[in-house]
Amino acid sequence: MLLWSLDYFIFFHSTSMLQNQPQRHYGITSPISLAPPKDIDYIHTQKLVEAMKPFGVFEDEEQQNHRLVVLGKLNNLVKEWISELGESKNLPPSVLADVGGKIFTFGSYRLGVHTKDADIDALCVAPRHVERSDFFQSLIEKLKHQEEIKNLRAVEDAYVPVVKFEFDGIEIDLVFARLSMQTISDNLDLKDDSSLRSLDIRCIRSLNGCRVTDEILHLVPNQETFRLTLRAIKLWAKRRGIYSNMLGFLGGVSWAMLVARTCQLYPNALASTLVNKFFLVFSKWEWPNPVLLKQPEESNLNLPVWDPRVNPADRYHVMPIITPAYPQQNSTYNVSTSTRAVMVEEFKHGLAVTNEILQGKLDWPKLLEPPNFFQKYKHYIVLTASAYTEEHHLEWVGLVESKIRVLVGNLERNELINIAHVNPQSFPGNQEHRKQGGYVSMWFLGIVFRKVESAESVNIDLTYDIQSFTDTVYRQANNVNMLKEGMKIEVAHVKRKHLHYFLPPETLQKRKKQSMPDTSQKASGLQCKRASSDGSLNSFRETDSRTPCNSPSLSRISKLDTSTAEMERLVP
Image 1: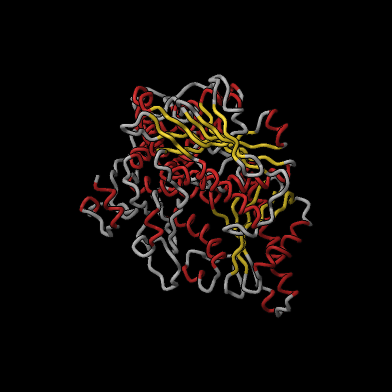
Image 2: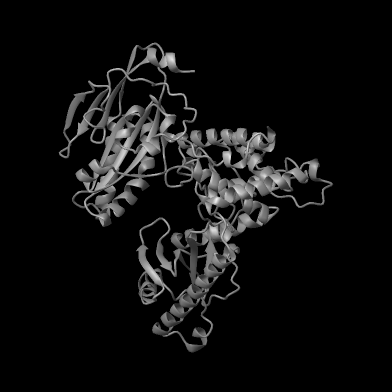
């Protein structure tokens, strides 16, 4: 299809298809279809809404009003704090009278697609007399004295520094930007690029959340149709286990941009049609051609932007989705070849299912059925993170989870591995694990080994891949002074038939889905090595097919002797 190359080379002019159309042209290419909806499309869309309701994706009016009240209170608190801070810094009364300050929202709440229990992403914009250190000190002190605010915690070293808290039952993630203005008025418009002038990079990142969200809404033909379609796609992505920016899938803003692009290509379609067209477009997209909602804009601010012509690192992005606000960035830099392959397979599956739904052969709940990850592969890697106390465990799990994509990358670089598919859901350890490690969380990666021609057996050594990952985690923990006694990581290879040592039957006995081709299939002569706490390796061999190598909960991967003959028999 010509569309992909048009997006890649960013054609700036409409084709003759739209020359006689009074309708506004959205996006950098002309629409694929301007067809208006048919009566059946309204019926399909209503059925889609009904299928989504049981999952709590829609708030009632009372819940919406409660969020507005909380945001109003937070806005007033921020204005009070900025004024009090100005007074303590001896600002003249004439300035203090209008010093202002404002809370903006972004993310799913600003887009209008938040779910019932979702948090609110908010931005505190302050004038120039307010320093970032004030935000993380005096504002936090003020918030601590509010009875309605609980679970207050600051994350100053994050990529976008944030203060997290619960305000009258609503979770809020508050970021900060200090503008080079004496006062901040209530009608401040963040769309103006001049607001970025003379700001540090952390403030620019904070502002970009709002600027990107507002630009996405500005670039879609029908905001309500966009919102309903995005709600459906986000729910589908979560149900199918591919919603996680941290683990190398897509986060909320990336899903929003893909849906927005679909809306641009089918500007008159209803949500039921757009969901189907979403799967059509992105199951056929020629990655790594980027998805763009608008022509990238030039600016004299000279901020770094995504541009593979200039930045060599940008050429290695495998699934670029480019934010529409300056400075343009790739929102999917965490995506790997494995996670992209998994997502493209899901797009194809979604297309097949929605085609049948629109033909009246299936119903919408079929689209929202979760896959059984634990029937999909023959081989798995189990990553276990444990700590002695609950507080230490929460810290440790956060760090380990943020580095899992390093493990995926290490495995992908192994020439004998085709796919390393991480399940975003973590699982608690069983009773035996808890006895050994206290508080335990586990993640599972499905592995597809590459078929090797002209070889009776293949020796796969993953010791370095695993050790490199664990070294990265421990090094990071040491760098931030987090590492405590009892914090451990263990990595094990597990065949599908041994997953019951880790997971309860109700998790494993869900309806089987079609398995992905696995070129390793049965392993012949599986060898394992266990890494002890002193770093030495103790070798042992699997001798009983009914039990894993010396309990898989304790064994680390070393070698797999894979029978090519058995592979070939089982590959379709």
